[in-house]
Length: 120
Image 1 (cartoon, rainbow, N blue to C red):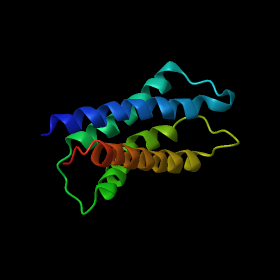
Image 2 (image 1 turned 180 degrees about the vertical axis):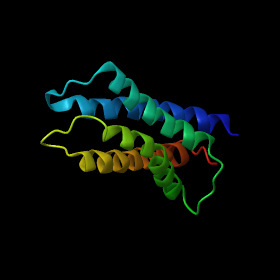
Image 3 (image 1 turned 60 degrees about the vertical axis):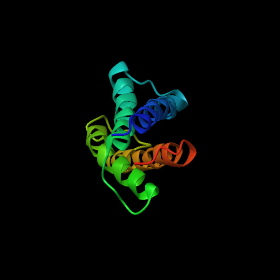
Image 4 (image 1 turned 180 degrees about the horizontal axis):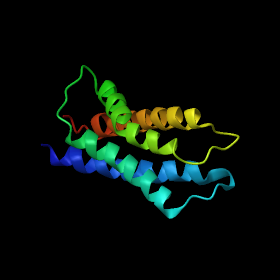
């Protein structure tokens, strides 16, 4: 295991967790503390999963997208359990949670592998 990669990816997961929390709470939406913790820890888990993963794909970008997808599935099912709002249906919340998880996974892998050169 490469410790540098694990630390960088996990820290980036925390950072993107707060970014995601900022997006979720924008527009006057009130976010409960439990949901805030879920959002931040979910994105942190994506970073940790990317950092510890030994799966080898043909390209780093594919690794980030797939890991973001896998680790966003539980949060996506949790998103459909909440109350439905006129601006976001349950299916929209499910899909957007997975898509944003894939984007965050890609960005975490990009910064970890390309900028910090912490290869698998």
